[in-house]
Structure formats: C-alpha cells, structure tokens
Amino acid sequence: MFKKLPPILKNFYFVTGICFFTWMMFLDSNDLISRFKMTTKLGSLENEKEFYLEKINEVEKDRTELMTNKELLEKFAREKYLMKKETEDIFIIEEE
Image (cartoon, rainbow, N blue to C red; front, side, top):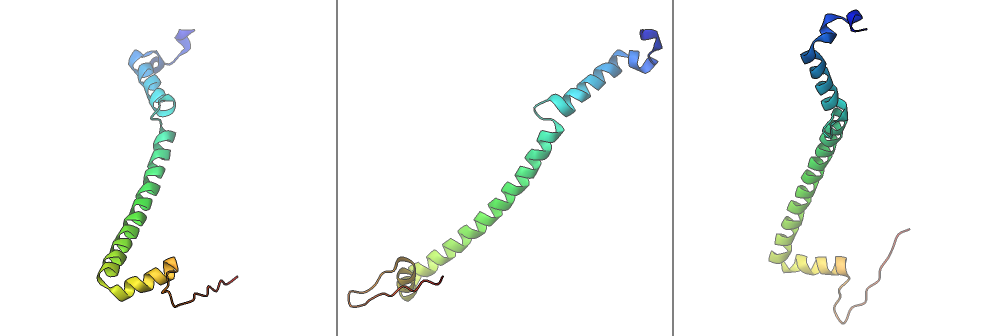
C-alpha cells in the first residue's frame, strides 16, 4: 500500500509540516477565518473610536463656551431643558 505513494508523501517532515499547516490554518483557535473576523472588528472599533473622540472634542468645546458665556448658557438651558423665568410662559411646537 505505501509503495504506491510518491516519495514526498513518505517523508516524515513533509507529512508533519502538512498536518501542522492544516491545524494552524483551519482547526486552531487563531485560524484564518477567526483572524479575518478579528481584523474586520478591529477596523470597525477603530472607526467608532475616532467618531467618539470627535464627539468628545465637540462636547468639550461646547462646555468651555457655555462656562464662559452667560448668555449662551441661558440660551442652552432654555432650549434643551425648557427652563423659564417665573413671568414667562413656554409654548412648545412639535412638527409631525
């Protein structure tokens, strides 16, 4: 039975190398499919990180503006939190 095999398939190192290669490429926990999925997820997480860093910078900029300008702070409080003076009435108009 083994006499019909080519000599390369009888070589212990070749067979061991093929087995090792197959194990590492398809059966291991760090196989090619898992590596591809992790690389894709890493890219999406890096994009999310950039998005949130930009949002943090915007919020910090708005915060410094609000803390330094009293008129802007009052406008922000009126628009976002519907705050009012005691002598005022607020009418909220919602568009459908």
